[in-house]
Length: 168
Image 1: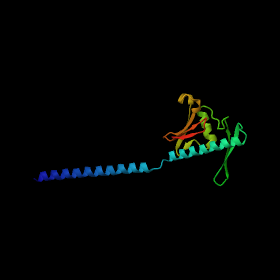
Image 2: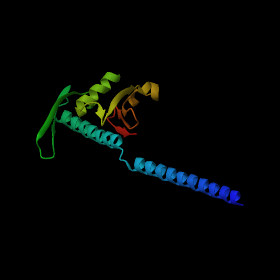
Image 3: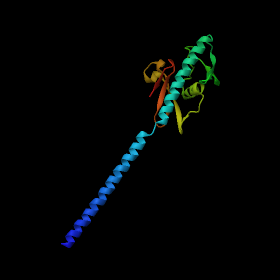
Image 4: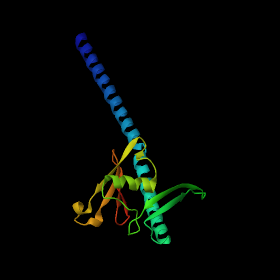
C-alpha cells in the first residue's frame, strides 16, 4: 500500500509540475503577444506622415507654378508653423503643373528628394522607391506610379500624372 501511495504522490507531483509549466508558458506567451500588439507602428505612422507631407508639397508646388506663370522650374520655399523659412529647393515641373518625374526608379528617388528633402529612411528601415509603368499596370500611361515602401511593409503610391497619393 505504501508503494501505491508513493506512486500516486509522484504522479500528482508530476501532474502539478506540468500544470505549473503550462500555466507559466501560457502567461508568458500572452504577455509577449500583448506587448507586441500594443507597440506602436512607428514605420507605418512615419510613412503616413511623409505621404501627407508629400501631398501638401505637391499642391503647394502646383499653386506656385500657376502663380509664377507656369515656368519649367520653381523654387519651393518651406516654412514652419511660426512662419520661419526652413528649406528651399528647386523643383522641375511638368506641363501639367506637377513635379516632373522621369519614368524610372531614379526619377522616383529624385521626386522624394525634391518634395521631402529627407533621407530615404524611416526609423531604422530604408525606404525603397519603385517605378511602375501605367501601360504595364493597366494599359493606360496616365496610371504610372512611384511607390515608396519600407522593407517591412508600409508604403504609399504617387500617381505621376495626377499628383494623387494613395496610402497602402
